[in-house]
Length: 245
Image (cartoon, rainbow, N blue to C red):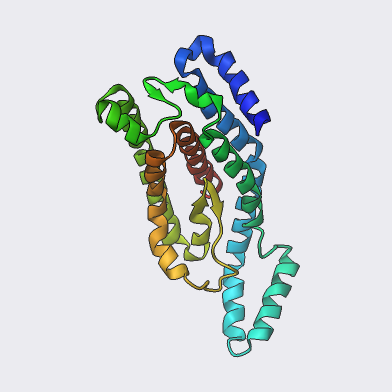
């Protein structure tokens, strides 16, 4: 953990001449983007796996019709199909799940109250402060409050973009809709080989609105963690729009 903190501090020192008092905030954004770039190959692998599974859906649907009265035979036929096409049933999920530890680690780093970065500011808002602190300090239109107004506006735009993309994806290909769930900015699949997953009906209805949950996150976590979440979510939105287009 201290290694990551030292790296971000060194990056903040490099940005100091350019960004001044907001150098630490800029360092958090750049460091988060750098980590996302490092794990991008996993995102590409997840996208390839999801596309491969999606292409098998018509064949799996035919197998379900053929073996509707024999679940054991259906299961074997589906596994044989995956082996024949060289597609893993979890090919769209495992690369995404492998990314989660890195993102939870970064979130912990930027929300840890002992992190010296939290003593810095983004314009007039302390990186260790929360929206409630900004409201009690100067109100919505105080210096710190305006920083959060800008963040909320930006997050709302990203969430609206994700909302429209997820709705289009679900309408075009319901079987691939499970790839639209994001945890910490990382997509995680939710449909197994075209078979309905228990509870997925409710999840599918809620899924397009999950991007707006970032607004709540930004409001309650320290500003440093909020910058991480906003950067990671924005990267994820652009990345998934390109990889799943």
